[in-house]
Image (tube, rainbow, N blue to C red; front, side, top):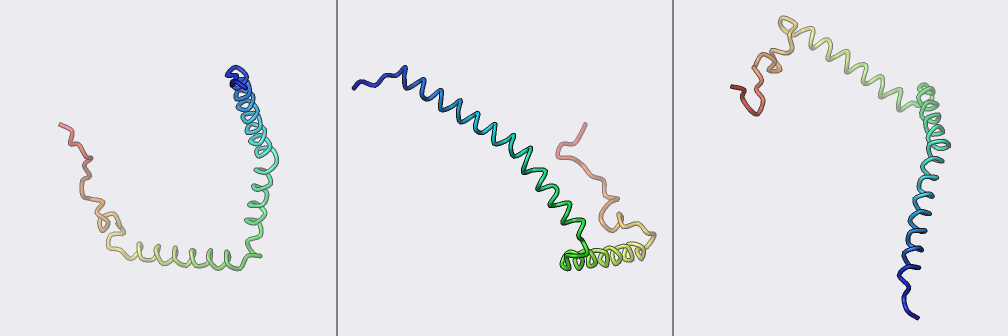
Length: 98
């Protein structure tokens, strides 16, 4: 039986169109069904901050660290942390402008 290239081309084109349609349909279904569900789940988790002890502990640790950093910045001389961080050193790009 000889290989009919016209028929093979039609089959490959039909497979390509079918798979593209299936992919597009899956993307639309994801957008309509799954993505809002995931968003609702994440909003539900964030609304239940008190119910998650690990999250509550980590937020408390971050608040304490922020207070310590604010106190350290306030204790700096002249209240200017940029001087200690090299903020007064002029910055030059990779190419000097003439």
